[in-house]
Length: 191
Length: 203
Image (tube, rainbow over all chains, first blue to last red; front, side, top):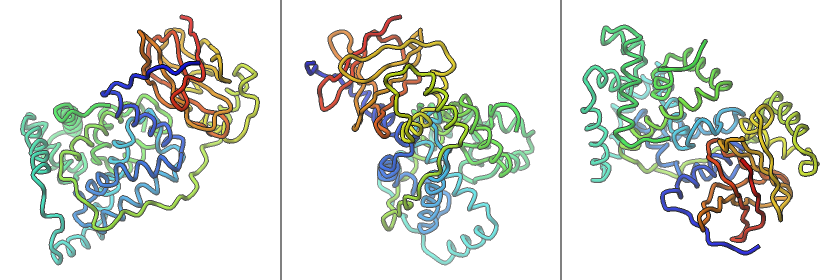
C-alpha cells in the first residue's frame, strides 16, 4: 500500500501525546512511568513544596506518592483523565496528609522557624500566573471564594471549614464544588 | 460510602476530605467509571490552580521510584479478560498469553464493552488485525496480532488522514481502545510512515 500524507492538526498534538501516555501508563508500561516523571516532575515537586514548604519533604513526598501509584494495580485507569492531573492530585493529597500529621506539623514549624525559605525568587512569568489564580479567586462570589481558599491555601477539611464559617456541611460542600468548577473554567482547565 | 461521589469529587481533588471519607472515595473509584470521569474534571480544575502558582526547580534531581514490579491486576479482571478472549472471533487471538491478558486488563472498559454490548467487527486487509466497534460509531477497539512496535491508527477522510492514536504492543498483541468517537467508514494502520492495513466499516 502506498504511503499517504498524514495530517496531524496542531491542536491535536498534545491530546495525542497525552492519550498515548495515558494508555501506556494505565498498562503499567515502565517507559510511561519514566516519561511521566520526566515530564511532570517539576510540577509535582512544586505541588508538594507549596503545601509542605520544605524542599526535602517535598522530594520525599513526590517519591512516595509516585511509588504508591506505581505499586497499586487499580490506581490509574484511563477514565480517570489526564495522567498529569491524576498525579498532581495524588501528590497534593499525599502532601496534605503529611502536613496534617501532628508530629509532622510540629517538626515543620520548627524547621520553618530555623531555616530560611528556599525558592524565594520567583520569575516574572510565575508572578503573573499566580496573579491569574488570585484574580480568578477574586472573581468568585465571597460565599464560594472563602471556603475554597480555606481548602486550597490552608489545607482544611470541609468539616473544619464548616466549623470555621459556621455554615452547614452541605452548604460548604456545594459552595466548594461550585467555586472549584468556576475557577477551573476561568483558568482554562479541560478534560 | 454509598452512592456516587457528587460534590465529594471536588473535595477529594482539593484534599479537603476527612481521612475515612478519602478512603471511602478511593474504594468507590475502583468500581465506578462514571465517578472516575467526574473526578477527572475536578482534578483538572485543581491542577489548573496548582499550575498557576510558581513552578520550582528541585534542589537536586528527583529520585524516580525504583521499578518495583507493579502488582498484577486483580484476578477478577484477568478472569473477565479470559472470557472476553474466548468470545472474540477465532483466528486472530490464538495465543492467550499473559502479555495479552495484561493488555486486555489495561483496557478493561473496552473489553467489557466488547463482551457485553452489541458491536460490529471488520478485518484489516494487509494486517492480522480487527476492529470491533459500536453500531453507532461511539467507541472502537482495535486488536492487532504480531505487533512488535506501536502502530498508528488513522482515519482517512476527505483526502487526508487524521491520527487517532497508537496501538501499544503487549507481547505480540497490540490494542487501541477509543472510548469516545464518531462514525468512521475507514481506518488505516500505519508503521514507519507507511499504511500497512486498511479496514472498511459499515454502519
